[in-house]
Image 1 (cartoon, rainbow, N blue to C red):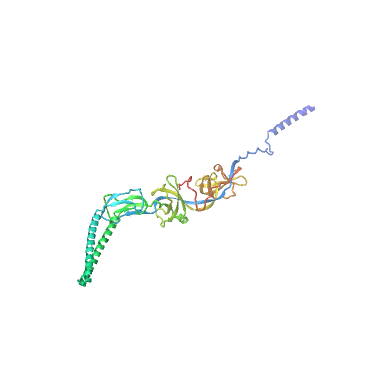
Image 2: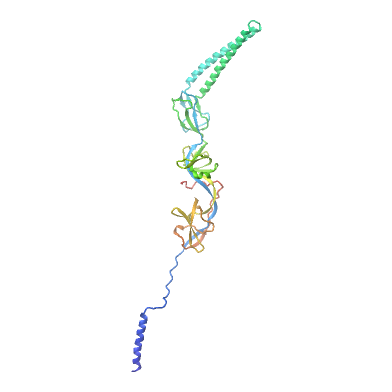
Length: 387
């Protein structure tokens, strides 16, 4: 056997072994797979809340009514209304003629009293002449002292009768003046209760008028909020023509309405042509000024009935913070539940969730709401008055 014969079987055996080794599963360490790509971080802008003063107010609604309604009546009875000289809605001045009653019976009585007064005046003149003559005769001793006394008594009685007639004429003159119904004060006639030709009773109202410059807003507020109200607090209202009205709390009702648990707050209004008695207005009553944190309104995320802000921590992760919205003014919102250290996502919050990784690209300047004076809420323009 030569060398070639030995080599060939060995070569074939090595090939078989190598083939088996290649086909058998490897029990060595598996090669490392490629790393999964990292999630892409959303780029956001952040802002820090600014601490500013925010006025507080109480929203309310109610009717406008005259602070004082004046009833115009007459003390005379049994007289017909002859003529009216004023109509509903007319502005009148104090002393202006409103109506005239039929005073024909009073004028007839006046004529009788005047005739009786003339008769008493003539009788007094005669009595005075007789007294003068009696005094002359008494000085001459031609009449007795008793005759002089009788003449003096007759003259005094004639004077009394004349004074009586004059007093009756004075009282009748006052009654006749009441037949002319006049305005007791400046104002606007809101009701005419009498009918021309009808007979009035003593004290019966003929007109009602309101003082034009003394209107008030009767706002209904929850009873639990009354303790925060003060007489003199400023009030802002919006008229139907969008005119802004101002007033002050003049008094607070003492009784709670048991049907709705509300109290009427009376607000004295400044004179304005934009409001009339009977108007229904909505407004706000100033409660004071409260310090609060201000944020851009775009930073507030509403989810259901709750408001949230999304803050970015030092590791670039989103952290949710629930807040309470105090008020919104323009593009800024005052909230509770944050501080000046949080880096809050300025906008795009609805697309983020707790634990999301973000990339901060810029910081937005904190909001600068208008400076508000103490006890003075801002105007109502641009603000919703819906409760």
